Image 1 (tube, rainbow, N blue to C red):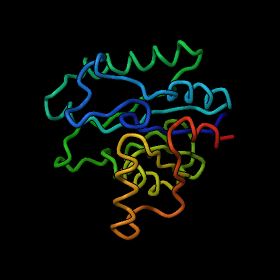
Image 2 (spheres, helix red, strand yellow; image 1 turned 90 degrees about the vertical axis):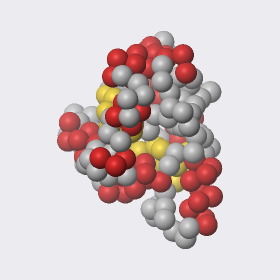
Image 3 (cartoon, rainbow, N blue to C red; image 1 turned 45 degrees about the vertical axis):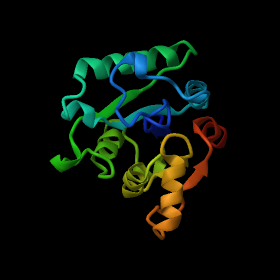
Image 4 (cartoon, one colour; image 1 turned 60 degrees about the vertical axis):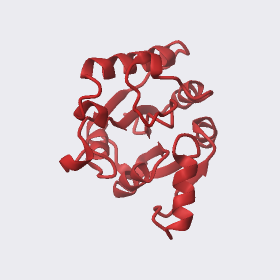
Length: 183
């Protein structure tokens, strides 16, 4: 059984983010090198899963069909490089719904580790925001903050807000840099 598992945030890590949400496949644009990075991680024997908050669904901004179309485009890009994504998990809830799956709560990460029969401490997580890092910390995962998406803002806020960021977070420029660190 392969227990090597990488959990990636989507917006700001794999693709460019938007303050008005990614609403359709045309708006979904990969960050240069991110798809190749996923393929390199897969080639090293890791399972790759995406864990993404998608409150645009709960807000009625996009329909589930739109979200699935966006993910189909992502999967097509990865498959064109001969790799695959082992799972895509998403939280459709709005922040005020107090669900257990919306990051920074660890519910989505716990479900992923359960489904893949992996301990949190055996996982690597990659995100661009404090909520990604907090969810990773809750399952004792090794975590990376990338400086794409909201990453630079997250790092700047961490420095000014005195240690909100979990300890032992590794900081890399982008997903491609993280792929180089994973063995």
